Amino acid sequence: MTTVNTQYGSGSSSAAGNESPRQAVNLSDAAQMENTFITLMTAQIQNQDPTNPLDGTEFLNQFSAMSQVKSLENMAALSRNNLILMDNLQTLTAAGLVGQEVKVQVERLQLSDQVVSGRINQQHASGQTLVRLTDGTGQTHEIRLGGQAAGAVNFEIDPQALGLSPGHYLIEVETDTGEYPQVEVAGTVAQVRVSDEGPVLEIAGVGSVPFYLITEFGRQPLTGLM
Image 1 (cartoon, rainbow, N blue to C red):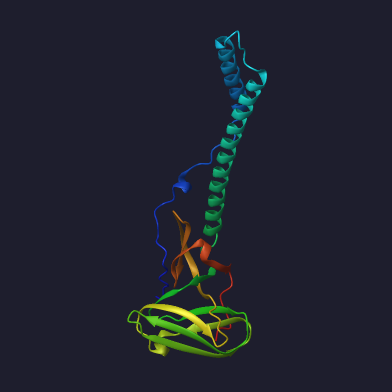
Image 2 (image 1 turned 135 degrees about the vertical axis):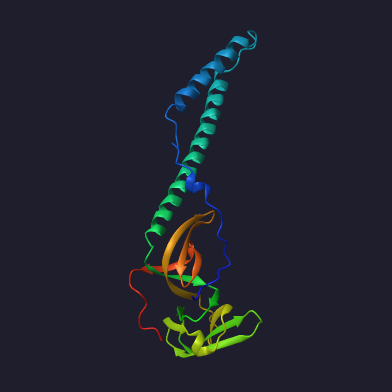
């Protein structure tokens, strides 16, 4: 099976995935803060110097400071719970991709005997577009795609037809106009697991890929490849 060996680790189970969202703002906080303020103010009044009483504005300043601290705490809690909610939604979205074909960004391939379907997007037309594979010994193998118009360019890597031995390869694309387009590879999502980096997709023919490296997904397989 042809796989892509990405530079991303699998990670352990996400703590965020196991943390249930908590209420961001406690509705009783305001009342509790008022009670605390009244208690402090009463203690200050009882213990103040009768010959030098405290200014009333000082109490207001203290109450304002307490309110600001509590507001900042509530904002931090709300932001934390929003992040947890977004992570859960992202995981649910990723889980819905199981069985669908996606395209993901790659920089490494692990070739076997299967054909790899890929795509790039050129900004400018080229007289020659070159796919370059570099094996573990540093030897390079070039696939010339010829002149290509600007836009999407589909290609295939057939290890048997090209005489490529199974193993790890770096992959990059270069055009004679000086572009180095990002390489995308297609594969079907087999399963989704949760890691510290978020959802990780196990893609048939690709391997473990973080959710954020998906560039396209849908139910229709790639067609019309060169």
